[in-house]
Length: 141
Image (tube, rainbow, N blue to C red):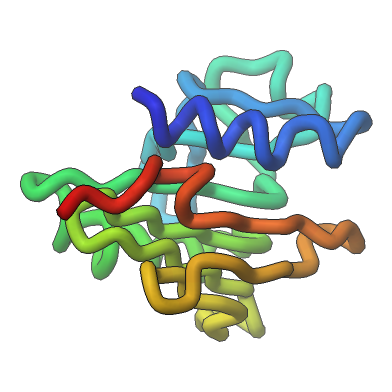
């Protein structure tokens, strides 16, 4: 969808040595396998159908049916699995939460909403400018 494409356009060009994947699975501890909406991975990781080592970034775009799964269960699994950052994009609530892994738990680096639509976050040593309107489109009345 629109949002996933915008995430790719925002992140992809800033990381010429890394690759974006939208259709790979990620193996996590206890042999769980998840398929994040977007992952930022090394070319070696990109070459396989299942990413076995930790990606720099996982992004989930929430839908009403996946909200609790993505925000609760997956976020714990991603943290435990050592994922560097986890971005949770909620088109219905118009929020983007940028979470950084700190020893297996998440620190909130930024939360974007219509009152605070812009933030800059550090990802793998690169400053990423985030803009809610770019990611989600303009607010509807």
